[in-house]
Length: 459
Ligand code: GLC
Image 1 (cartoon, rainbow, N blue to C red):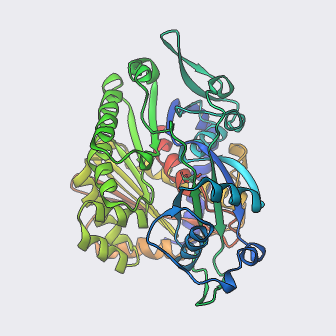
Image 2 (cartoon, rainbow, N blue to C red; image 1 turned 135 degrees about the vertical axis):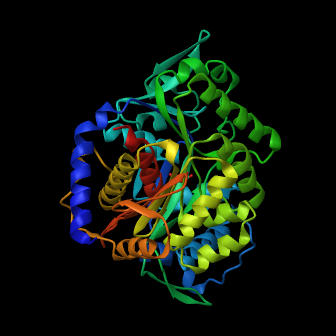
Image 3 (cartoon, rainbow, N blue to C red; image 1 turned 90 degrees about the vertical axis):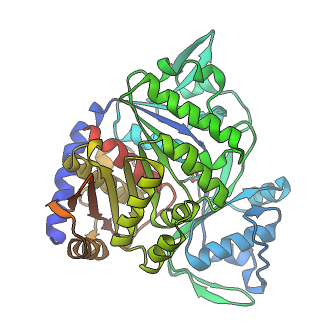
C-alpha cells in the first residue's frame, strides 16, 4: 500500500481521536519531572566553545565534572547523532553552563512532566502526575487540568500543582539539540552531524528518587481507584541496589492488586549501565504490561538481557523490521510484558499478546501517536487537540513503507489488515510514519509516541 492509503488512514484516525479524546478516563503518570533549558546548537555556540582548537579527551565516564567533560559529551553526541544524558557531578561547572550559555526555551521536562502536559492538552479527561518533590516554578508549568496527589491528615487529596509544592530546589536539566548536516571541526577531526538529536546534562538533586513514599503506598487503593492506565518512567534514576529495585517491584505488584483493570507502561531510556538494565528487566519490566523504547534502546535492552548475538544482528540489519520483531519477541519472553512498542526512524512496530486487546484498535492508537509526534516535531508544543493539524506538509516515510513490504515478504505471519499481522499468541503491527524536512525539535518525541500509543486504544 502506498502514500495515498496511509495518508487517508492518518486523516481518518486523527479525526476520530480529536472527537473522542476527552472520553478517555483517568491516566496516572510518574516519576521524573523537571525543567528543561533548551539550547539549539548553532555556529555561535560552537565558536563560543572554541571547538576548532579543541582535542577530545574522553575518559569513558558519562559525568560532568568540568567544562571539558561537557565539550566531550556534546561532541560525541554530535559525531554519531546519538542521544546522550550525562550526570552533573560538579556544581561549579553546572552553574557555569547555566550562566554562560543563553538558552532558547525553558519548558517542562522529564518523561513524566512532558507526558502529563501533552495528554492534558490533547484532551484526556483526568491526568494525575506524581513526583515526590515539586518546586514552585515547575508547578507553574503544568496545564490547568493536571492534578497531583498529596498526603495530608492521613488521606490522599488530588490538588492543583501549586498546592503540591514542597521544595524550593527546582531541577533544571540542560538540553543541547543539534541538527543533522551541521559541520563540526576540532583540532583533530571534521564531521557532519549524521542525525538530529540531543545531548542532555542531567542535574539530580537528592529526594527525587522514583519510589512512592510509604504514606502513598499505604493509600494505593485510593490513588489508583478508577485509573485505567499508568505511565511510568524515571527508573533510570534509581540507586543501583537490589533493595531499591525490590521496593519498586513490590509497589508495582501492589498497584495491580488494588486495581486489577490497571495497565502499567514503563518507558525505557538510553541507560548504558548493563547491571542497571538487567535490574530494570528483572524487577520493573517483570511487573509491567507494556514497554516503550526506540530502536537503539531496544539494542541496549537486549544486551542487558544477555542477548548479544541478537543485539549485534539488530544493529547490523540497521534496525530493520524483521530483527526488531524478533527482538520484541525475545524481550517479551524474558520480561513477561504483553505489549512492546518500538519507534524507529520512519516507522514503528508493536508486538502484543492477543489477550492484550483488539489489534485494529491498537493500530489506530499507533497511528494517532504517530500523528501527534509528527505535529510535536513540527510545532514543538501542541496547545490543544485541534493543533494536531492534518494539513501540515508531510510525506509518509518511504523507509517505513519499504520496511512494511519487507516484513510481508520475509515472515510467515498472517496478514489480517494493512500493517497488522497474526501469529500464534501474538499480533504484530508495523506503521510507516509521517515525516517532514522541517523538524524543529527531538526532545520528548519518544515520550509522546509511547504515551499516546499506550493510552490510545481506550477510545
Ligand atoms: C530525560 C531528561 C529530561 C528530558 C527527557 C525527554 O528524562 O532527563 O530532561 O526532558 O529525557 O525525554
